[in-house]
Image (tube, rainbow, N blue to C red; front, side, top):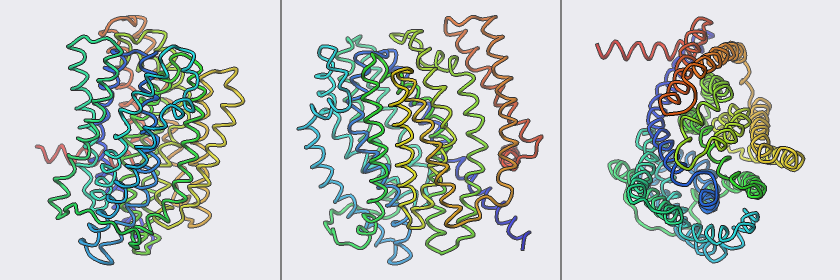
Length: 535
């Protein structure tokens, strides 16, 4: 019995690793393009007046997208859509998707109109500090109104992504954000060539954002059509599938609303310091690279698997899927956490420090990145843990965990902002994410159990030891290279930024394999098999 369980666990781990490898590869392309987009943005607008205005102007539709599309809707839609073919066939699933899209078009269309009308009070709520700089609040309001339709485009893209993920077709959905970045970069290239002033660049960037959102949805439509889906507007608010999604969304939306309150408060305090909004956002973008590569990828794979096993009442399979996903997540994010803490200045300098982005912006952004990094494991862990509760039909647990995380962040910001400034916001966010993940782990163990068994903590301890040694090596490499090459110029930035990262990655892989960490063995076996196939 034990041997059979281990074989199943190994097969499940390999399946998750292969699927996560595909999604991570696709996501890597998108994240690299996203970094290129942010590099161009920083060079064109720096981390001050116009960059702050864009960040807040985009934050309003983005907050609503997180609330209604990529957050609560995705969490509720995927398990419901995955269950529907078992009950009524694929045509019933397509009909459910059409009804969801129709409801979204009506409800979010009204929300967009309301946000355009009330843009002034919304901007005042998020960034009251902008009133201290002439014209900054007015520019932010204009950009908010211009970018509000992004909410509907992103929501449609999220539904399409959920449909394809539920069908276990992960490649195109993972790659679709790359097209958003390609369009934004292309628009930025036009702005760069034309040599426009910042006040025109920021408007052009907003237009590029809308075009990118349209491309992100459109690129997924051909894959859906090949599956047989055709969009037909269907207004059926009493549909059982819609009602189930609404029931799942209600507590999830409440939990996400608490997170949005968190962001509103953070934005309010950050707006009191010139450039703080942009610096925090640039730092979080770097943090989100490993979150997107590992947390979102594994969360995407796990969500489909968890939903299927919950629908089949396979609790052993559900526990095993979650345990394997968390173990693989720890293997990837523990070294990423150490690396971002140790090499934050070098990474920020390499990626952002050019054009209007000054050395002072590098130091401030690296400080925020260091503090954000404390919560990386928790932030990525939530991407895997929360879907388990939605698959089980227990959305209240993530709601309560989210509320506690928000309370933690607010307490840190309110208590420490006067002394630490924007640093308190990064620290509060990190601690809140750890609280969130910790409560989800405890909640799953209490209600379902079996998560802490099978030696989960021993390999994580070996990962931590390996990551600590990796961090020491990377720091020494960066210190020595900076003494030799300096820190000015692209050549010095490339050497001092990339060589320590490569050395640390290689060292971590060797150490974890030497310490017989299972995830290292799985990944090494996958690499070896691919090399053999190529020969």
